[in-house]
Length: 288
Image (cartoon, rainbow, N blue to C red; front, side, top):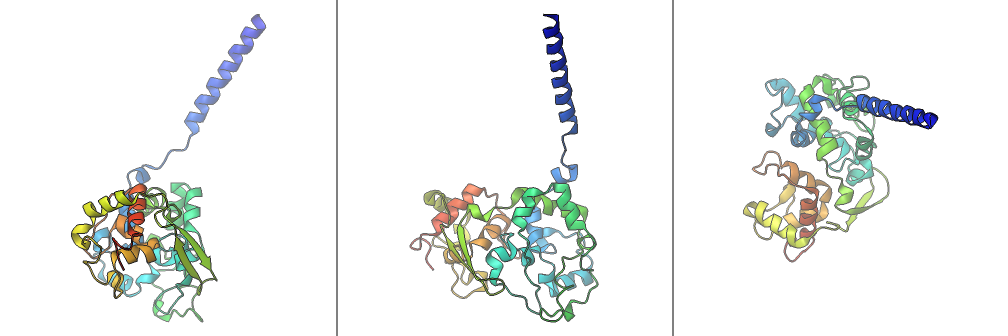
């Protein structure tokens, strides 16, 4: 009996020891990450020098002028896409030009899920193998001189730690996984491949999506989404057509805003976005 009692006490002690040890060694998220603004991060991902981003180096006019002149060499979305899939998604056909680099083959959407906030922060702030701010981008040629221009910018020269943490918070907490919104099929290879979309809105509720549109969007876009002509600077592009043909991009602009316009960010849940997308598939309500 005494032997059984001592065995029980020993096992109980080991359990308590292990439990306490596990709790004390659990990794904690950095305070700067906890306090970061993921919505701001979504804006930075689009264009970190935009007015809406309150860029920390906005007073450096020479720098801002360079960022605007060579914008696609600095925008995160240019290399990784609105869907974070790079060449594995909607940008499979976005080939390079002398004024924009090649699209990244990295599937950022997948990588983000496997990395801690600190690992992502360190990767963004990394200096090795990154393009220096002083590199002359006017010499970029995708056929003959692309290696340095295609490199990720040295963001340690461009962004504050607070801005980098905001990007990390966006990537970890605020990004909408586009596979939850629609299905897509790729044919061919980068940079001449094609993408086709199907099942837009997936399990969303069209009626709820129409209600969301009425409450959030109708005042500017009108009841049928045609009040603002030529969306995306494309002749004849209506809101319905934009969502149906560019669902990869629409989701980001709905949630984080269309920079440089009165359209600001909305607090939009995944279900809200599914519902809106499902409603937009109705070409009678939201015609081309």
